[in-house]
Length: 117
Length: 114
Image (cartoon, rainbow over all chains, first blue to last red; front, top):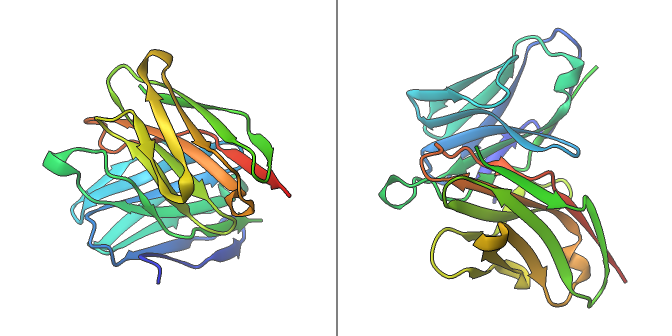
């Protein structure tokens, strides 16, 4: 059973459409993240959240927004999709490290493959 | 700022041969280093991590990595490749007080030839 569940797994949409990608987790982690993966570029951080009232921009937040509806739910929205947002999107979680450190590993969902035509 | 360089976007080895995937990092403060593996149509999974202490780190599936500060390297090795090791491998670095800003390398796809 997946601890981090992303829906949908695949989505094709048209330029200008609004789309939401959803993520839910059963790991009990406070920290949640959205990453984008492009071939040959590794993963880039879009947004992260350390609790329900804490939302932070990552490296590439332009064109994206997020909502942390509950400790276990973190959704990513593309307000007006464009073709260069075609990518594989991952949600991830992590727990707070010992003494508030930041060395806890990330736990990933299986990804959403988004195509914008 | 931290960065990661993975040498070789594609590596091919024969089944039973040594696997060596290279990772070099740049960081102005002591780093935390990770290797993740990604199988087709799946998310990334943690293979191993280095935080502090012993510099030789053992992970799952027979993989290990050695943190070498003098060489700023964290290469991943496995003595004998198995067909099931075919996947993409990502090295990643973060540092204390980085608010979990993890920097990933661009990945190395490992092909295992029977």
